[in-house]
Image 1: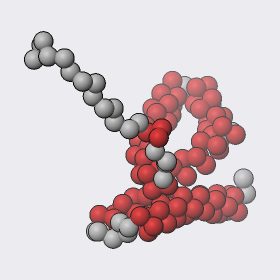
Image 2: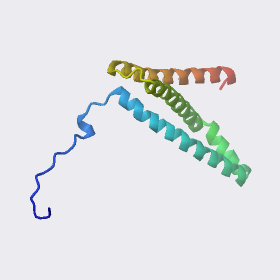
Image 3: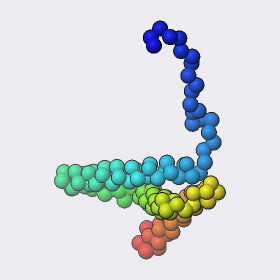
Image 4: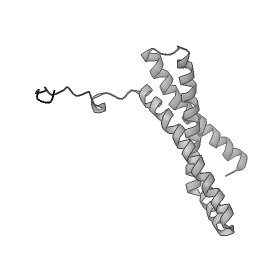
Amino acid sequence: MAGRPTAPRPLSPHLTIWKWQVHAVVSILHRITGNAMALGVVWLFLWWLVAAATGPEAYATFMWVATGPIGLVIAFGSTWLFFQHLCSGIRHLVMDTGQALEIGVSKAAATATIIASTLLTILTWIAIYLHKGL
């Protein structure tokens, strides 16, 4: 085999020539949101734990960031991550039963997960705002 000339092998199509479909994006988002939540919770918990163990000044810094504008943006984003992962997980659960596998239904369900997660996030933060008076 070493002396045989070989013809150039055809290349597989790259992702750039394929049109991104909403159901593919939601499937990828499901994995990203799951990992982001897992890593985010671990890092925030570790930061809180180290700050609490270090002393009052470090804990005050943590609380200042956590309750300030940056913390609220992270909390809002985390809420969306949670609801997106939840809605997408429900979609995958339905698909695992053999339902909603047709392209049109799959696209509609994927679009519904994005809309539902966004609405649930907004409604959650409206409820928090009305209850706490932030």
